[in-house]
Length: 374
Image 1 (cartoon, rainbow, N blue to C red):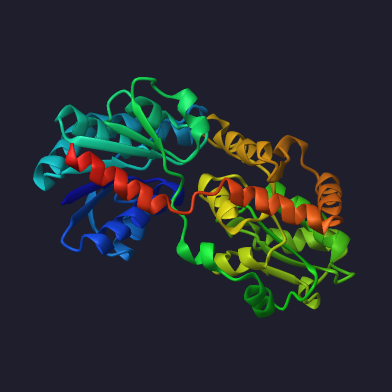
Image 2: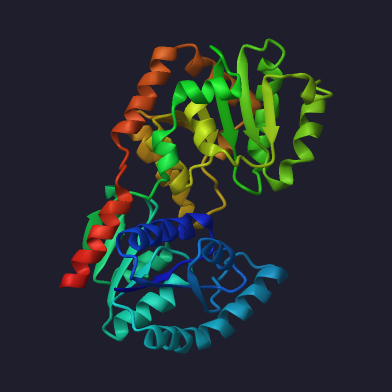
C-alpha cells in the first residue's frame, strides 16, 4: 500500500492529512507514505516532525489585491506554475502511489490533477462548508471527494462522487474530562470563557476581548482563558491598560497566553468559547460539545469561515457575530445574555455534539481502502 498526500499552506490543510497518515501507519505498518508540499511552508516542518517522508514542490497562490508585495508574489506564482506539473509528475512516477490524496492548499492542485491525468486513483478532502478554489477545480478530475459537512456539495461538480466524512479531530479532545480539566485549571463553579483568534492573533478580537475582560475581571466571577496570538502579545496589555487594567497579572481569574498548547484541557473546562470559525476549530467545538460565539475572519478566501460558522448557528449550537458588527459592547452584551442561562449554554453544547462526526479518521481510511479495491 503506497499513499501520496498533497497538502500545505495552513495547519487546517496539513493536520487532517497527518492524522489520516498516522491511522494508516497504525493499521498498515507496511504502508509507504509520502507527503508533497512547499519546502518553505508549514507542511515541511509538521510532516517531518510527525515522522513522514517529504517531497518538495514549489507552488504559490495568486493574490487579488494589488500592492508591491502581492505583485512580487504573483510573479513567483507564475514561475512556479510553469514547473509545478513536471515536478508533480516526477514525484508521482518516482513514488508510484496506489492512491493520491489531497487535503487542500495550493499544493494539492497540481499534484492531484497530474495524478488524475496519469490515471492514478485520486481522492481529495474538503474541510470547509464553502469549498476552496482548489477543491472546486479538482472536483472535475478526482475519483472521490470527502466532505466535512453536507452543505459543501452544492458548490461542487455534480458529476463527482461525494462522501461526508467530517474533519479529523484529535482523540484527546474527544475524551478530555470536564471535571478533571476544571479542577486542573482551578475554575471551580465559575463560568469559564475560552477565547482565541488564531496563531497570529486577530486585532479585532483582542480589542473586544480587552473590553470584555475589563467588564468582568474585577468581580472574579468569570474565569477567562485567552490566547493573544503572536501579534497580540504586546497589544493586549496596552488595550487592557486603556480600560483601566494596568497589570492583568494581578487578576488570578485571567489566564492570558500567546498560544494555547493544552487545547483539550481548556476546551473541556470551558462553558463558552469565543473564536474564529476555521474548519478544524469548529470540528473540535462539536467534538467537545461546547457552546460558542463565532467571529468569522473576513480575510479568508471566498469568506468561507462565515459559511462554516452558519452551519453551527443553523444547528442552534453557536451565535455568529460578523467582524464588521463586532465591538466590545456587542460582545459583552452577547456573553452576558448567554451565561445568564447556564441550562441554555448546556443545550447549545449538546446541539454542537449532535452534528459532530467523531470517527472521521476511520471514515476517511475506509474510503481510501474502498478506492484501492476498485
